[in-house]
Length: 175
Ligand SMILES: O=P(O)(O)OC[C@H]1O[C@H](OP(=O)(O)OP(=O)(O)O)[C@H](O)[C@@H]1O
Ligand SMILES: Nc1ncnc2[nH]cnc12
Image (cartoon, rainbow, N blue to C red):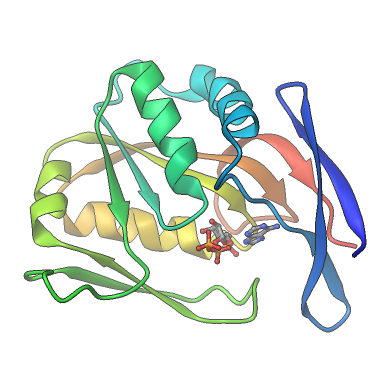
């Protein structure tokens, strides 16, 4: 399998080059199962978190360990939007995502008991990769619908030109 080197915070990984759409190859970022890479990325993002931040908000799947490590370092709680409806969800916030970066549309789900944690809070959006920016846009809508205020949008890697402003610490190529 062809790989591509990606580096953040002085830690390098040779990750698979995938082709989610014909003629568009991208390095696949994955934090799951890699504590050293995850810690390096969280440390790189940490200075970008505004002092007034009260809670972090992320999505399944790969950004979860990243957000967990960052939240622990900051002493802040975090909330995770799911990518599938779970049977125990009550009155969830349901948000469509228009992204086709990986060739599929998505829906994000946030159980009301977690949405309540965002009410009147200063929220930081956290992701691993921002490409089209549509996932971030959907996350922001969810925070607004939950009654929170977004004070920063952060991702480790930027890929191409996202459709909204996101602070990042490294670039990914589209090959
Ligand atoms: O800016 P966008 O074009 O919206 O792309 C970025 C999104 O894509 C990735 O999720 P992915 O679909 O890989 O989910 P996974 O972590 O569950 O594999 C990433 O975690 C962001 O959520
Ligand atoms: N390079 C990438 N790695 C993982 N998830 C992604 N989503 C969009 N681009 C991605």
